[in-house]
Length: 279
Image (tube, rainbow, N blue to C red; front, side, top):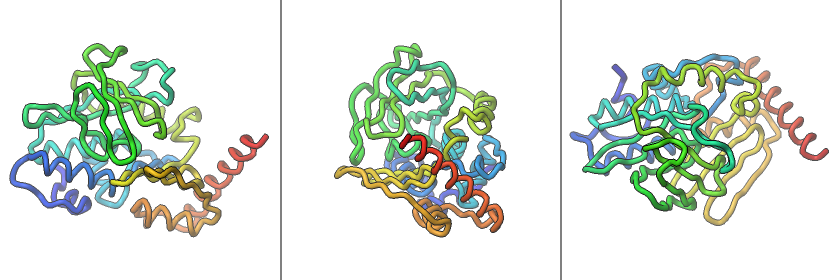
């Protein structure tokens, strides 16, 4: 069992007597705004599991995670609140040219409500702010336009395409339900392989009604309808302030030596990327 009331308190959402569309939208928006997509524990050298109860516990102590954590926890909350939730095997592609359906690097969620199915996904790195109806077409949320269409790579599945300004290009998912345990091996690869983007660059991201906030290493970027603003953070104090104030991350369990080591690692990696880009 999970602490439903504690989870709702973190989201700032009151428990409703029965599942409704209005409540689902409120839960999704609050999750996107308050629970960041983040990979800090990978860079701290602290392995995490992806069990739903463990992921909920992470959220209750002021942390986030990536799709296996966020959607794993959110699906557990929605189920406890009476929603008809299905977990799906998904594959994110960074470019439209990448083959879809090769590797299960994403946990997607759908909810059946009021005789319709909805894509409910808080783990797409700042993409969705609200649920999307699972039917073909274009859907606008804030400054972004997304697409949904039947997947050509995964028969019976769906293909989500991101706004061109997003951090990835597309995500296909299978129609059948899947257990969280199906992602265990991929979670290990994503969190430990030197080839993994999660290992190469620390990220923190979240959505709100106006746009998307992303911290990649030392670079903080805000994307809204009017464009994108970007700045580089040059000091450890400011960097940790951003994590706490902008991304609502509680790092009280990271002591001073660990904080210094993490900042050094992130700053050094940023300088190397800048040097490579300018060469």
